[in-house]
Length: 257
Image (cartoon, rainbow, N blue to C red):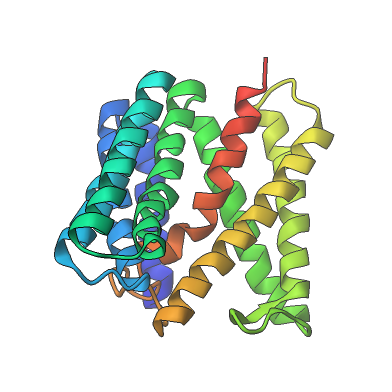
């Protein structure tokens, strides 16, 4: 019951924010969510130094704002700060390159997709943004119920033992059908076949995002990224598939006339 109630509250809050919040407030909210998810990533990645954890949070939140700037400003700012951060981690704190790079990658992994989510809202409006979120939810839900009903063969037994090939197939099919139908209503004039392919691809990368986050938690010996959301775990647990699907959806929109 706790999981159901918190899930409904989260869904209603997300829809309300996307539909009614002004763009600046939505960007602030995205930055806050990015910061919370980045803090969970830091814990899973084994970043223990308080200063480094704080930098990951700040950089992830800042990424949401950079993506609202002109492209050359975004790239320049990100490059300068990322290089400065790497130098600080390696030269001042004595961390190896791999550990320093994982900290920088965490900010990009969390911050950039959430910034693109806001960019989608700014470019195409709340209906298209909700289409993105709904497709990810449909895929996740179909994976869960297909896996429970038909799951026999494990998809990635070492990383996530409960995920099955049958569950993944159900998510892929449901996502393709949903995007073909709902996408035709929201993205008026778009043929259903390319939309179905988009939905299929979004589900596929979303599964990769889910498995990526599961791998992070398994390496850290964690069941959930945190206990922030009752019955659901942490922020990162809720948006792992969305983080991978959003950039793909954004690129598709950029290709539309």
